[in-house]
Length: 431
Image (cartoon, rainbow, N blue to C red; front, side):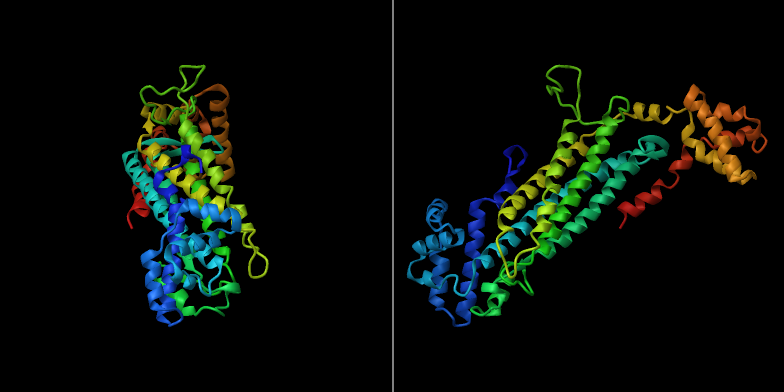
């Protein structure tokens, strides 16, 4: 976790204090369940709650000798609880604590990320409605295609993040499992009722078959969803970066008073926030392959996944948390240039209406092949000579044989391309 790209609420989830607090709650709830079954004294379970405490520095000190983090924690816990501590962790194995804790941390992180996505959705919706009918040239292959609106662009990104929200909700549900099944997951030394009780207390679901670990296909799915969300962040960031290019200039990041763009060139206003988002997205996605490789553990367990998860758990959630908040701010403060939008819309002298002319000629009686050749022939003059498309068509006898000048002019109406904007918005925003 890099402080530059970290936010306190998310980093707190991965702090030692929160981790060990969760470990203690798992052990204490398990002790309550054991006491209810008569496996350990009820007084012992009560003592564990009352005197259960830990000191992070002491745990670290013990681990230097034991080379085992869970044993170090349990040893420190015993130092605080006293004699009743011998009943802690009875019938359990380390993965029962580690995996259940990891599930809780990922669920906690998911709740923050869901709130972050909501911020992105709110900013996209507000700006989409603001520019709902603002014409913008659409581009395919980076080349001017047909008119769209800036609002439709943003509505498309809103729909994508709405899908991402549903994906994350599903991933959160899938990762929220509890394993208190003992060595190799057979419940040989601990009653399944303990797992059920702990799961209920911690708002998790019992893992149906946990071997000695929770199956890592769940985690692979979770981190894959984070990777998809990161890709959506980058797609919007790249769109804004392209729109800010000097030759385009349709929209740009807010440039605050006192901000500097370049140490060498005082005139620069660079899209540094969205470029940063591209980099952050790469880092989140980089966790997906290791998460998938973690699925393949030996037999009932090995620990090849452990070192990976100690890194990708905090790194991906902290990074994505930062990225989503930055993206929401970029959208909220995005500076739009109506003049540049209009200039670019008209840059190709009307070529953006070529399909309307093509369809009109076909409907007038010409074959598609002949109609295409006529439209393309006139379009090439615009590309190569800077001519005006409408004027070229007016001077083409083949065109004028099939339609009047008024009919031709009407084909260049921008309203034709925006007539269904409201229908699309209702699909996206009205549920």
